[in-house]
View 1: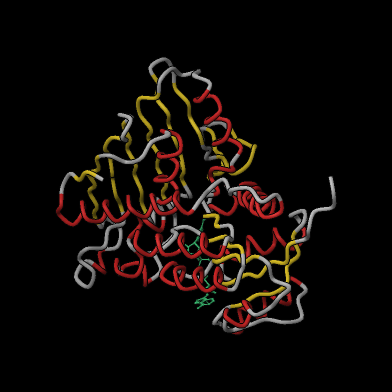
View 2 (view 1 turned 90 degrees about the vertical axis):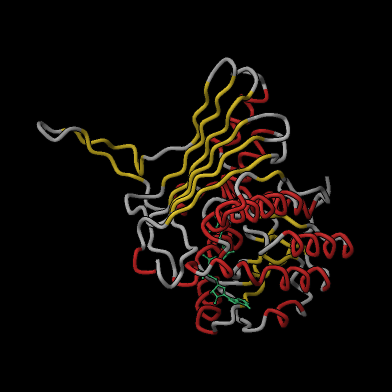
Length: 340
Ligand SMILES: NC(=O)c1ccc[n+]([C@@H]2O[C@H](COP(=O)([O-])OP(=O)(O)OC[C@H]3O[C@@H](n4cnc5c(N)ncnc54)[C@H](O)[C@@H]3O)[C@@H](O)[C@H]2O)c1
């Protein structure tokens, strides 16, 4: 086999998630070469460039798109900007990795998919759980029939931190169904091997009483349930500001068995002393729990470009999750049980 082409990569959005990808791509991803960064916040762009050993940074991502050394971009700006950035990137001929949630609504997702198809560039969405070793092993065991036929997928993600102020505004954030539970929504669809059929969701604000008057529709806890088109049942629960840690878990119930995915332990040491029970560390952050999965998805993205194959997580996957978020929010707002 010949030597694979090296792919120059540009990062758009140098925040929390952006820097995870950049730190992977700068020296851990075979065939990738970090070339440029862009962030409207000049200080964030500069800090990223210095850390990554780059001599240049941009405050306007369109300048990064003019750089011929950049063959692919990682889009990690706030979700409401994904549509414009992805469409501009495709028009500039760059392959695109776009973080979840793909966009604010399904119509935007369709435009993004269309733009990438027209420009013949790859589009991968950041559902990194599909690259997590535990998730992949559970999927393999499920598909091999070890728990019989799948009956129910129960998936929850609960985050520890106080929401950022912009998250209280559902028009800006689409709520925690988008920000926190997009991953569960995708995982349910992936494990079930089927699209969402019926959906009923309930939300409530239990931990942020100070915004009940200013943002009456904000919810920090949600339960969403229903059936997939192939009859598999699902239950998703999500929460923000639980404080006790980052809590992500999936249970797959089959006709003949059960699979659990996800762990809580932050390390392998448990402390047991007289009178104090057993103490163990609880995972504090998604960055630690899915560290390997972020790297694996970055490696897969570069490989998809080099080998000209379809990314494992596509624009369609991103759009289907956004559709479920939209339906979930409509259900919480009073629309009751919905068919998708
Ligand atoms: N896959 C995951 O598990 C995961 C985890 C966290 C965040 N995310 C997603 O990643 C995206 C970013 O989230 P974050 O937590 O890193 O946010 P963040 O606020 O830490 O970072 C966003 C960065 O984008 C920059 N930015 C804003 N407008 C820009 C523009 N026009 N051009 C370039 N940069 C711009 C901001 O200045 C900021 O530095 C969101 O869509 C979020 O949902 C995904």
